[in-house]
Image 1 (cartoon, rainbow over the protein chains, first blue to last red):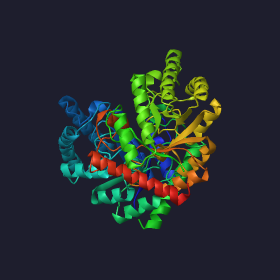
Image 2 (image 1 turned 60 degrees about the vertical axis):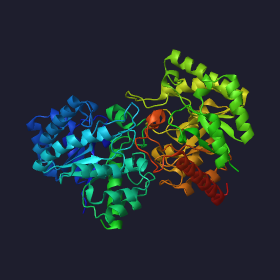
Image 3 (image 1 turned 120 degrees about the vertical axis):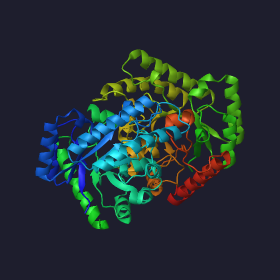
Image 4 (image 1 turned 90 degrees about the vertical axis):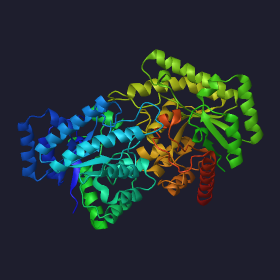
Length: 293
Length: 293
């Protein structure tokens, strides 16, 4: 049975927030996983990390980590100073994740988060720099038994890996048991010719999965074809985590990053959002049951 | 029978190009309309405008115009100098369109093209400024018998009007027979809960329609539900133009604006692109026939 999770910033407009509160909320609603941004770990004392981890253990919640890499740490940069700095930065993040006994990191973890603001005619230099960086990072990931996932994202959020095919080719180039592909339904909806085929193309390389509707409301309330998606996950015998990343609130740093320029739910109170989270959990469970996951 | 068109920059990586060539190409393939960016009209002599118009008339091609407004002419700006300058700029564009006997302008024609780079908690001031500007512009559009369409675009390309609902409310506020809503399948796929419902919501306000697949390949080759789309156009008895805006080529100014970071077709030769254009025309005609448009 795949573990099901939710991203903390569904509720919060700032990236950093009260992790303990959301560990408890995720557990109360019935999730197995709480995911949040890895970067704030760097600002936390070992004591704070231990406290968060203890609470998660107590509530039976696994913590998972994603990140959108700040362009100043872009490991696909052809500027060697930036690239090396990025490898060091991600290495430090892995140290923090390991302190939490974390098992997976994902996101735009292979290049700066965001689209280029210059004409790009050829991605080969960017790809070469990123793969070189990643070969260093996965050695550490192997030692730490962390799965380092690269997430294919839509064209407005990155240029290097927009499709399942590009992500699989990247992972093959890095060639390590510690690396995998993460696919996200919101991004696939914008980039893939066929979402089911994209999942099947990833096949055994698929080591993480994010769900979200076409407009980032909770799964089941937009127009994505969830039967196609869950059938494809069954086709590739996917046993990994399924973490939902809905974003429905206008404003704040999260609204700016996600480009949420309106509230996508009528009831924006905490109780209202809790109901949406419960809806998505029930919906995903029903899909898993229907498709035999 | 709805007139069918294609956007010139399907073939060209620069926004300005040889209009005469593409008038002939569109006619040869069988389209009724060639659409291109309105801004280059400002750089053209009256003689050149007349020459392009004469060629279009000779080939039976209607010319239509869209634009992504440069933020320096943002008519939704609360900076009065920018706003007034934007109204003047769009007024000059209308003058040029009128010289071509043009009937429709669309696009991000009500605000600067692009997403805000600041935290946005409230769009009311932006909306008020834009509606104020548009009330001035539609007077001119009424006199010139031009339909001025506002196109709802995805969150990465604009903040003011992301959905059919927002566009309809805007049009009601402007309240003129010369203004209408343009919906685009690529954008709706990212923003609407249900694309058919979004088209039906626009209803009588729908005065322009753009087609493109979820990843901007030609209609019929991605995963959009074209039956749902054409059925909804029939439901609202849509008689207007249907212009396709596929973008499949990496690179150039167009690749940068559209964020095309890979070639989305195998055959990027002109002959290969012509085949794709013919495919989309045949596909749209078959859908129109199927749904009685």
